[in-house]
Amino acid sequence: MRIDQSNFLINIIIIMNKLYILFLCGWMCAVNLGAQTWDCGDQGNNLTATLDNGTLTIAGTGAMANFASNGAPWVSSDLFRTIIHANQELK
Image 1 (cartoon, rainbow, N blue to C red):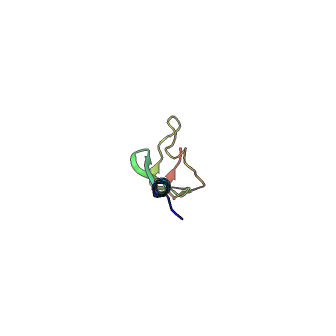
Image 2 (image 1 turned 45 degrees about the vertical axis):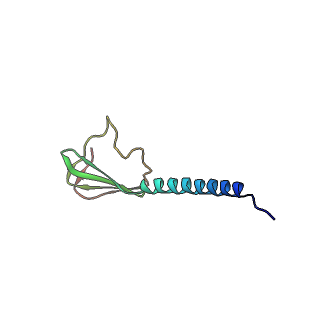
Image 3 (image 1 turned 90 degrees about the vertical axis):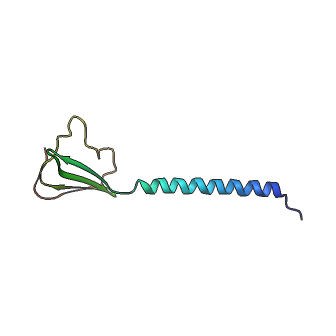
């Protein structure tokens, strides 16, 4: 039985390209899984909001900035739980 080498090599190249694309897509998704942090205090950086795996944690002191006109930076995220540490004023 004779194996056609040209078809065999083409099939190997196609499989390698598919694996490369699959790896690249997985890597790009993994990059987006890290925590995101924003300064959200009324006075600049007195409060931070961190979104990590669907949990929004707000920590710091003082009042939070008013996001009514522009919207909070985490609004479009998948948010499942919120943790607010003591000493925050939410407007």
